Length: 187
Length: 322
Image (tube, rainbow over all chains, first blue to last red; front, side):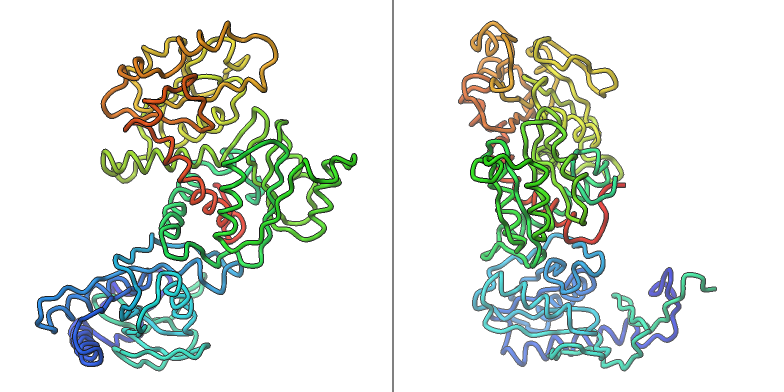
């Protein structure tokens, strides 16, 4: 699974392949449907940029698994302007936020690839509040790698993956890998 | 160029302009939210220092800073200690000493924002909001934003790898001589790939245009037939000393975009004006309110574009320009 890791990363272990990812997505879709009793009021919002493909994929599976023929609105949220490290490092949005439906009364499932410190999710919660008053906000992630710095807990997890802080977890539609960050002067 | 100030369009370069346009799109989306405000510049203080009259620029800079959650304290020359004889330099340094992050400077003399930038000893930024006949960079940026977005909506996206206004023919018409907008716009439009023709009577052109990437014409009707954008400028009577044209009526007859002359424009041509519009002088009522007119969207873009500039200078952590 070479293509997952590029540039300054060296892949150490593949922890989920395409099949694992597919099965985890189906399980999460069923968990979302079970907990919310169907797709009524459901909105999936992916966090830029790693969570957007996951939200789209999960949305497709939720629609299939519900069997009701209902469509689930999918949004993409960029939280750059809500981050707590503005001024500490360069922070730029990667895309225009697109939340296609009003969020008042909706059940918003935030989708992201990796849950780490929880700071991105904190920023996303603040951004959602500016867009309306959801009935509930839930969190779905492909990988929970630990090291939380805020009291934030995911509702749906593809895989719990204990990691070291200096490792990087790379997630894509093809799978999940643990990588080492190569130093500038690395091999 | 330190990358900390925006004194002219040249401080940004083509990549910087494109970055502003990209950020402005994200801020336009913010403006459509139920709560159109983000916490990006919390704790920053922005001081609009306007030593010359302004409605839209001052208002939209204030609104932009507030929507980024910055604190805004406006200095207007009429109610400041400048009236007691304090010099501009002392006024600026007094405010700097209180700890501010940005000055937004408008002045009737060219070069004042650059002077202010030179006086500052800390790391506050200076944004030029119009200085004399020199530059008005945020006006040019919002014009670029409006034009690029409108052309994309009407004619589809440009091919990747080309500049956003490649091959677009822009005619800038009217009082070029006294216009900071003309100078900033021609720099910004050409940086994005457009070609610019200046149309004005010889008395309303600058003494020299050597080295500027423009063509010059005195025949508006001939230029209108082949341009994609007609950009009309306001006659700045307040800056004119002496008689530069026989009468306003004669000016309108030769250089105004009358409803009749507007029929020469191609079916896809667009009409722009930086405001305030003197209807019936540069632009007829029917043309200013017609389907080709972008005048209202230009004003609407102002807040998002100024948010983008303020964020780029004060929040992003990235130096501007190449």
